[in-house]
Image (tube, rainbow, N blue to C red):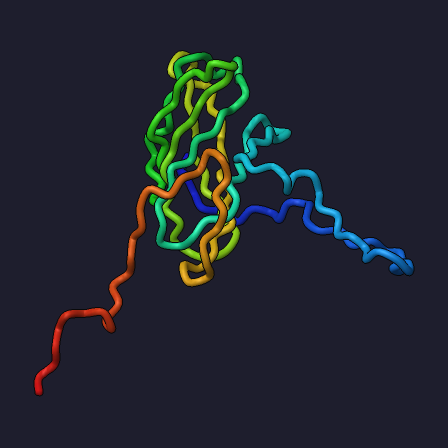
Length: 175
């Protein structure tokens, strides 16, 4: 199976506004879903045994290290490796047993384009060749000129890939 970029369905959540008209007195409050208060990378098991990992807002042309813990998957066993199919934007750099159980996964992600992006990698069991788990990493990527996102715990910027800008060239034309 090849790692592929696919669009992920928008997840529920966001801002809720009260449907009641504002009462005379203090102004009405905006209510946020509890998920938005979390400041860590969210790992959600899917019905098919695979996982969705939401890493929050990132910036185009930036390289990130993302660390998350997957719950224990007994069928995978303790010896797990990434599938040898390369993904141009997402690469697993380390998989170790987590002290609290499950697997601690470290990967590098290069945010190339703006939008809600989803990259997939496969984790393979080294003891049972019939077992694999798909991990989808979803990021909301904003243009590099739109400001600096607050990164979730487990995500850190490790580099910037700047595009060539002809206006900043040292080349001087003929006079």
